[in-house]
Image (cartoon, rainbow, N blue to C red; front, side, top):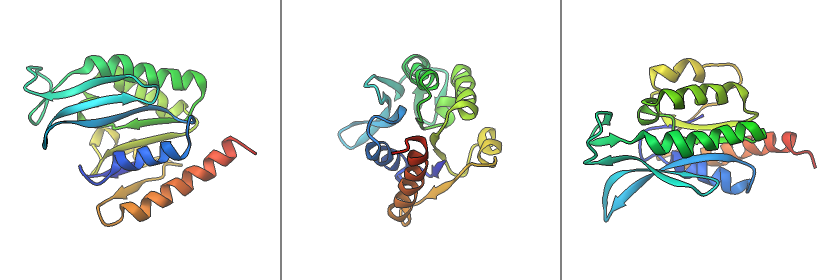
Length: 174
């Protein structure tokens, strides 16, 4: 679990971990959509190369987080497909991020909980403090939590990569 407030580097760290182990992970990132210096939404990008939109300013959706109208179609197609394919293949999985936007989808929640209990290794980013709907998972046995902030993100980034390295070696003996 990589937890942190917005802007602390959760997605950046998740990307560094995935890049450190090329081809090993499946899953997706959520990334800001910017027009100039203004954030206008959030996109979803799978590790298999598919892209979509999760939320956008001005979208008339009744599902809202702040100024953003939530668009579940891409999450429920390309995002969930990526998770299901990882589960079928037994791949380690990245889900960046599990937050309010994603949890609007009952299909996403169902597949996320399935992945939580079934995948050999799950790297998840989420907000801090954790959402009450997820807190019980994050307290479970075997869960490693890292709480990022701007001061500790470089040091903890190395800790996370070292932790994943140990698991990687046990999953892929030389």
